[in-house]
Image 1 (cartoon, rainbow, N blue to C red):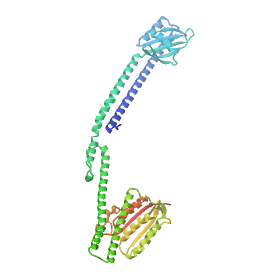
Image 2 (cartoon, rainbow, N blue to C red):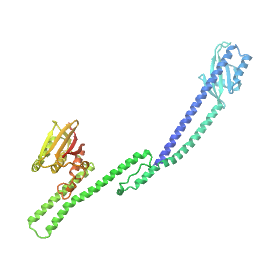
Image 3 (cartoon, helix red, strand yellow):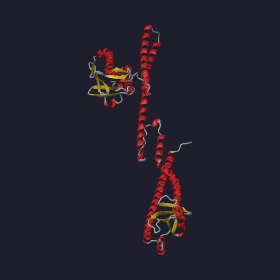
Image 4 (cartoon, one colour):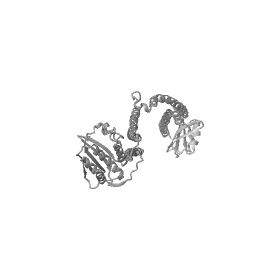
Length: 458
């Protein structure tokens, strides 16, 4: 079964709401009208009964004058019936219905009652009159014919039902028409979005012609297009960067191979050419491994082996590895820690790789005869590691892009570079995020600081 459209659902809901409201209004009207008339009937019956009691208490018996006065009281109002019973005898009755009422009233359990006599309906009151001359108590039965009002309410109820049915269908039809008209901006929005392709992601939808309720939807849609546009640009740049990075070693190997084949050479020359080709192949293999690592990170396939490690010891092992290379450039390492324990949960090899990438960049772009400071601290539930080097200040517009793939602050260093493909910082960010940590960078006055924050283990 096909699902209902949004217009049909809203129209159906509107019809149900209108029907429910009208139904509640009809039931409330019927209830309160009945309550009002029942209250009025009770007031009239109480008043008539009170007068009738006063008439009976003035005399000792039902003589002609008393009966005449009672008849006058009853006849002044339309639809009344009355009966006076002493013991088992009916000593007074007004019209034939009164006699029939007495036999039915005896079974009533309440002073106020409603009894049907044939097609008529009576609302009545029974009152006991003490001190009758015969020594017995008298009982007064006074009834008001409410048949006409019962028929009126039945007619009103039928009209309510008919009106409710017509209103339901009419509200559903009108609701469908007005809702279809109200949803036209969404249709226009859908039509506009259908024209957007990968080649025109710079298109934006204006929210000036849409209702205010759809402004948030349009803004979110435009924001999504902006993210997609940026993602496509990064993907296009990524593909171009991969092609560029792979083209350089491939061209080098092709050139060397062509030169080697131009004439016969001795084994030493061939070995040199093979060693050079091997270096290029190793560089390409490292680049492919890095790209595979990032691809796994993008798909959440990195699963660190979480164990407890002292981040200070991990950083110290990285410093020890780069110590001899730093001496050749005249760079000193300064490792400081302000806490007794800087334990974190993580993968030792991954954490070493992340710290190593930052230290390698600090050595590559840092000034000769300078120092690289590594400060480790524990603050609350976090352990932070800061690596600071002196060198060229990184422009603010590049800080947010440092962790993008193949990004280099100095584009001139891209050409002919055989040591760095620009994937190190992207890999570092992926590793830190896989450890539920954060990484950032700040640069000013010739000093650049990379900061890593990881959840503390203890």
